[in-house]
Length: 108
Image (cartoon, rainbow, N blue to C red; front, top):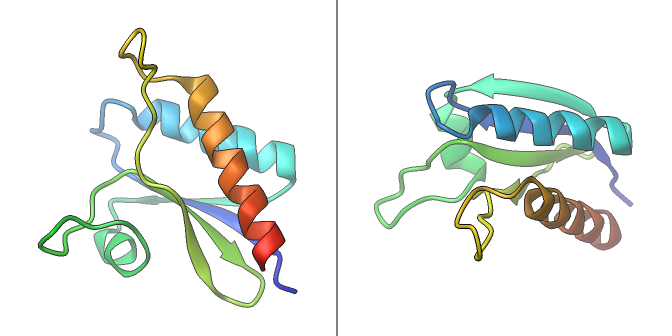
């Protein structure tokens, strides 16, 4: 059974939520004991493994999990917003990312 080896955050420093994405990735890395790799504007990586628009272009930031068998799976491609405040929600982001990481670990 493949296990998560590390988290990969592909980000863009100009993005308004860049720091929130980095904070999320660091917190998850510490909590689960995963290594963390931060890529800066690696669009080829994002296009290869991430979500894309209808013409095949990826956006950043996106977070991935690299498994010990070499597979790379998408963890999160959009930071969640609180429906009440319409502001980015660290709590919802952490919950969503943890749920996806747990799913990845169960399936693989």
